[in-house]
Image (cartoon, rainbow, N blue to C red; front, side):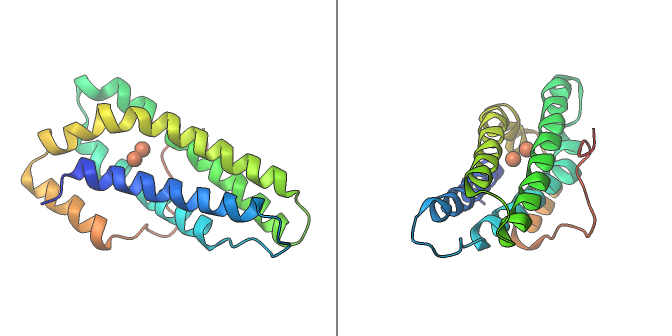
Length: 162
Ligand SMILES: [Fe+2]
Ligand SMILES: [Fe+2]
């Protein structure tokens, strides 16, 4: 079975890739409207990824040894969530021809920077515990969610509004 750390890290890369693809299409000067699908796909995947972490993975890892790093992860998810909300707002304005593309690119870059800061801690500090510390039943639940799980309607991360 694939390591959870590998599967979750792959999701990080796919999400980054979708945002970068959108930025590239936004920067191209061919006059065509930007292709937003890669970005909306990436943001949907990112929200689902954060749900998996906060609702399934992190509770299994809760305990004194990871309390501090998990607190940081929850806080950064909140920042990432708000950055996505802002970006969506700008996308809606851009669709009406109102927002400057440079600003949308800037908001994408902000999101990529937050993700880099977050993932560069989460991958080495949290994910190894997913494979080492979780009981087989939890592995099964996580792998199943990775395959077919969906973000519940209306779910927001714990610190989305703090
Ligand atoms: Fe995370
Ligand atoms: Fe993650």
